[in-house]
Amino acid sequence: MPTLPLAEWRDFYVMIGTAAGVIVGATFVVASLASGLEKREIGMRGFITPTAVHLGSVLVGSALLAVPTLTPPALVIILGAGGIAGALYGIKVAVRIRTMNLDLSDTAFYMALPILAYVAMVAAAAMVFRHTGPAFETLAASYVLLLIVGMRNAWDMANFMITRRAEK
Image (tube, rainbow, N blue to C red; front, side, top):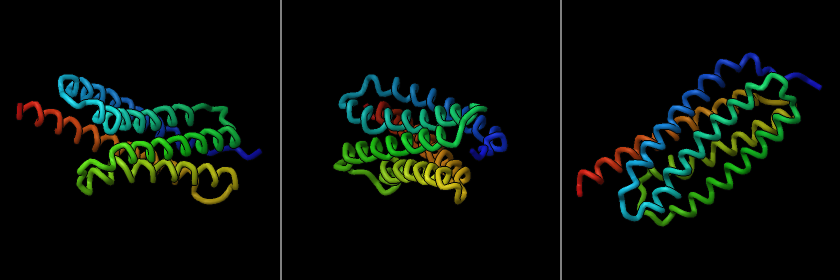
């Protein structure tokens, strides 16, 4: 059984997992800002919760990748299952918010880019399974993309909540 080059990536996963954890905390602040707003269910289910889920995926994935005894079959299962579940969840969120009047940036960051990141995780799992391609680079790109999506969306939601309160 081939070994995984995870030791070479340890610092990357520690750094990105820590960043994701911090932004998850910021997302909870955004959720508390939304607590007094009407019609908050679609906001929670369509925007705040998915952002926390995407950041949580990075956090949990980074933690799992730091396990020193992780085997290639376990990695394939973790990445494959996580990527498929994330992509299906992303599609569910996209269906939920598709009728809203979102601009191109919001459509990309709330709908398209998370699905793309999860599909990249599945591709990384396939590369590990086949022992081909830049699996860890692909996985790193998917985690960075989810982190960027999370940062942007947390900022977008906070900005929306604060300006919405100011209008009342």
